[in-house]
Length: 304
Image (tube, rainbow, N blue to C red):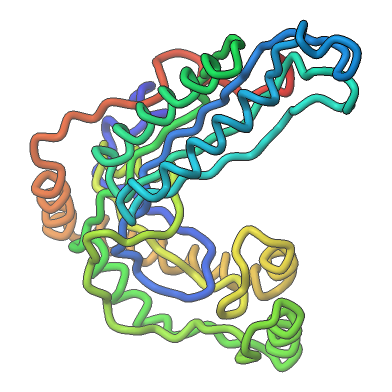
């Protein structure tokens, strides 16, 4: 969308994300790169003639061991995850193929890229050790969010005007039951509006493609309560709340907060200028360069 120029004539972008609290979001996110690693070996009978086999599964284990040893030597802001997608299906055959999905993150793209390069080299090393071939395929990559505090102040004013979300007794009981099942303190939802936070240098948290948008246009972020406090994110518990009135109220609230902020910007060109000036100041001389290549994005597949 950025490469297609969808934001070229946009002054300010406004986005929101479901959360366990309601706030004008002036924290960044983690830059991210996703890639697939495949190993290609030679099948053989695991008992009768294993010497004729070259195990793709061995390469996979060596590779993940390398990543795990590497964790000691990266900065605290780095996150590395992997998911083994294919190690073959039977025990009496030396595996001729294996595949895993790998993700590298850091609070800054500049810190994430060297780790990405190193982890790719580890795939080559694992392939050499196991005497197999390998392939690394890019899936996706995104920037960290470029925070805009001028925009955050406008959003904060509107949250204070709206006040916290109000919940029924049934909704509070539902939220507390979710907390009980997930072994959290049973306090229900938190939608209190607190003062605008200071922006931390390294915020932690997750990643979002809004990061790329924020390096191409001034961006204002919002987080709105759609689940009880401390609910494990990306879990069934959050999905359950999103599918009922707790989540619906958060969605409606976010639409109100964003609409009010859009109206403020539309009616006051001075505010637009302040937000755009802050964007230019924060971006500095950074030249946006997408991690994914131009053209159709690489699509992950279960096939080789």
